[in-house]
Image 1: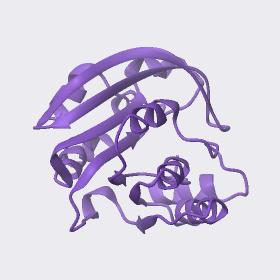
Image 2: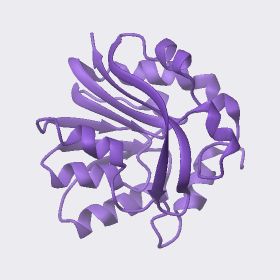
Image 3: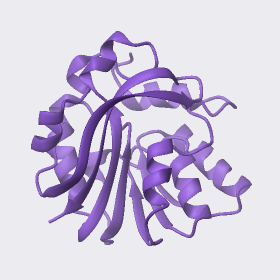
Image 4: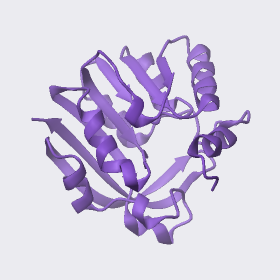
Length: 201
């Protein structure tokens, strides 16, 4: 992996294929479909599959990523679906907004371990009291699989780390499980994930 994460993600997204597909993450979709449309923040949103799905269902969507080519793909996908999303190219700790969001969606947002706890607490500042976090990411058990995710165990999650890094949330549920991913070229096959729904206290 290149030293600069933005270069890595620009390279990954810099082709015609949507490398994680154009359909939303299944868990994110199922959770979002149960909620009344409002304001949604999607950090590290990449090529825009979750943002565009939400926008087509009347959510007011703000997204960001460190990758310019990710943004270009996301805006292309939104245009193809006749919706608009607000999309910034910015690092997580530099992200700011004057909005307080109803929902934050974190789908495979594996920030570098040296900033991860700080990053997750920073993002919670933009969530309304009573707002909801929808989260799915790879657990540490994923290291043995070839279905996606960082090959650095420190960047993968444990239940205990989730509880530490998302202080200020009440977990409606929090589980580690095996799922079958079919999300483009890089998320494919059986995977060990952690999922939660949390409400800001």
